[in-house]
Image (cartoon, rainbow, N blue to C red; front, side):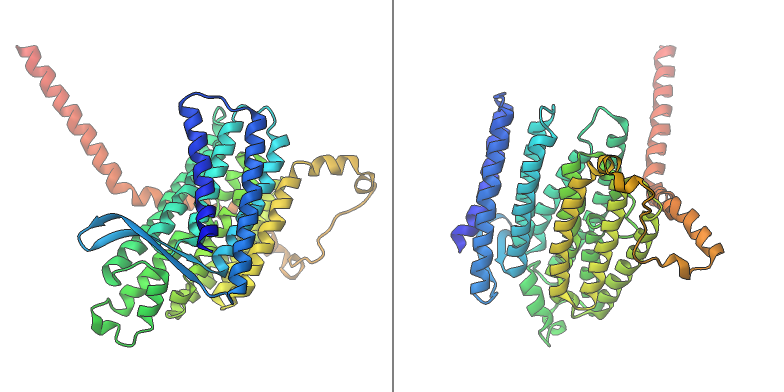
Length: 445
């Protein structure tokens, strides 16, 4: 089983190194070679991940731990590559391999003769490696590595059409959201190292189960609760939960295949995946489960209301995705972890198909005579009729503006960055004063 696991980690890494080397030595790889290579990589990865999942199930879902030599050692601290192969990780790895393989095949025609085809294949391969690391990482230190790889590829693919203004602006918006929430994972790791002396998920659970926890020099309940709070904070942006929901619909500026794999399938579900991975820790602090449930329920209502006011297919799908991910958060908060995992798999698969299909949706409606011949499309269920008409109108107006979430976030960012801006303004004035003094001295001489 360890051999299969190592192959899953090394194959995308070797493929990325090969692509990077060919770029630096300026060896142009043909589009046919890139598409065929990515196809076979995805087929091999899918077969390996399926085999690993079957072996995990045959092993009665008992997790296996793999520890490898440390990379960095500073005093008592050492950065070890700690991995866990369990049902959760192997299932997510299988989902990653299958869906990325579908995206590779779809992109072969969708991005045919596109100028940035090599860049797209390279970033999608990097995404595969990052997701494999996140799937099997056993510590917050290592999961942060894969987390950043996924975030970097996401931002670069949002700005795929970098010669246009809007994709670049929206990629910057995604960077701000990612960086702000990624600090949560860093804070959780630092907090866990300080109070628990480890970031290993399994060890944290064992330490919390120890009745003599506080006597052994670990922090109090408030300090340990903050580790979970920071983890929840780190999961907000990737899954588009409030108050970081507005960047995800804006990320639709990228190519449709990247929108499908990032914001319909894999990247957007990393938040629930992290919560499932950390669920044993949350179970010791019920307040954390309440926080997860409240955030998920509020986001689901918000995204459902705003999504009903949007007219383009991809933005509607983006808000529908946010809403369903919020429901998954609620399921995790209620303790339905296995059902949440099943919901995650089914939702990711369905959204991939819907995003890939969205490019042909308008053409289908134009060419389908049944739709245009007095056929009115209605929702099967509508909750609006239970809301008073005056209140419904107000909600619609606010939902049309996204409940002013961008404006609120901008005000918060300006407030938080006020000390930094004041410092730079002071530096600017000080430099201006120095330049004036220097000019006056040299002029006198």
